[in-house]
Length: 506
Ligand code: NAD
Image (cartoon, rainbow, N blue to C red; front, side, top):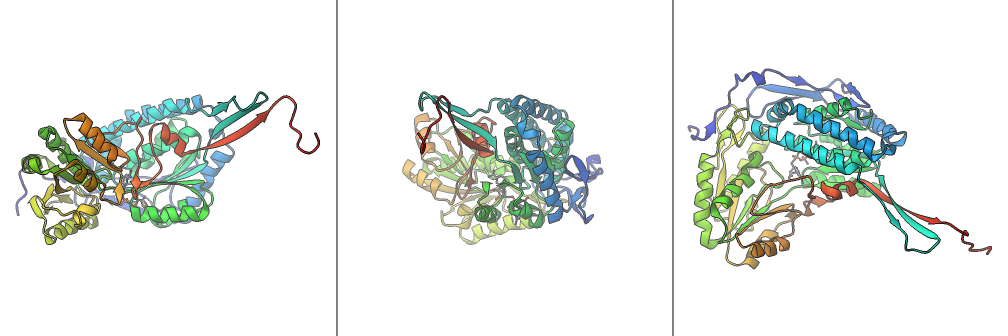
């Protein structure tokens, strides 16, 4: 079968594929190998046969060393005891150094994840902005004073850092997700051990090296690379971490939650999603079609906040679908290194097969593929933009997180029906509503149970606004002012002055 006209054939002779980057872990400010000497190799998912990076395969002992370094940096300091202004200055420098290395970071992220180079550049720039926002807030973090509890009493609420945080991240947005957590946690005064996905670890190591170069004290930000078990599991289980902040699947997140519960350890969970995009009959159909295509195809659909369920008013269903299908036919997908590519590669063969399995299950259940529905035979892992219609809410393609460029379309007649369909999910991570009637749009979005919502938009983000999940999509909030509370604990101090109270001897 020949490739469609919008497919961009991977160029295996691209010189950027010839540089393999070999990373080391960063523990206590030093670049180190795993004690076993074992390494994990990474091939570009967009370019068959091109090995683009390697990193150490950490054992539990390696992770314990990193936890020890973070413990010392927290318990001995000076990081948690620095002023907000001092911490802020370093966070600003990290933002500047990230900006200075956008191209380098973007190429590494593009080749490890398979995401389009232009998208990767935008993401790294956004990350610099997150570090800058956190830097600004880091010197504005405050407690409270209660001065109305009596003439001779004062109540103080002090904000303190939680301690050592184990951060575990997935493969789809390694630099963004680490940037959603690390500056907020160290901004409060925590120290960190970050374990990125074994599939895409390079840019996380680069982030920690940048932080070291910016003057962050040794041991404040450590990176260990390796598999979920034992490296991630040790971070969750070891009593040396005071908190575990996990982003990834519900399956692993549930396990992390169980470990944390047994130890009464603080936990943050950012998990999966099955985002609804509700389109009313009065929506701007061109804008909605573009947003729907972007919402489901962004990062090849490997996106927790993907808008993968189209819930559309029956009166405009055919008209809207025609536009989405037209965009799907024209949107460029293929070689992530090509400047014009909009949709890149799938992360692995196993994941591509899983996505294809969902598409088969949808067909078998009676849904109709309007476009796509197949992998591309190419030198890389590519899946064609795919649109399903005739989807029933009980089908697996309507309920489960496919994590690929696959849209499932369901019709509605009334606003109540649209809200019920949007909420008919065990997930609650994100949602969009498209309508020209702002009153209707706002009333609808307020009834949808999801943590990150858009009106007449999709996948938008800014460090000021919190993100996080309702229902099985997670526990806790990242970003904004709320993101700092996640890594803070609050101490109440009762101060008595004047004559001290006497209980037994007065
Ligand atoms: P995953 O759960 O398989 O892995 C995530 C991380 O957990 C990886 O670093 C992995 O090595 C580690 N891990 C695996 N087993 C572990 C264990 N037993 N103990 C500790 N750590 C372990 O997820 P993934 O396939 O990398 O990512 C895809 C998932 O992540 C999707 O479900 C997606 O929705 C979710 N995600 C959520 C968000 C969000 O902000 N809510 C963002 C991105 C991705």
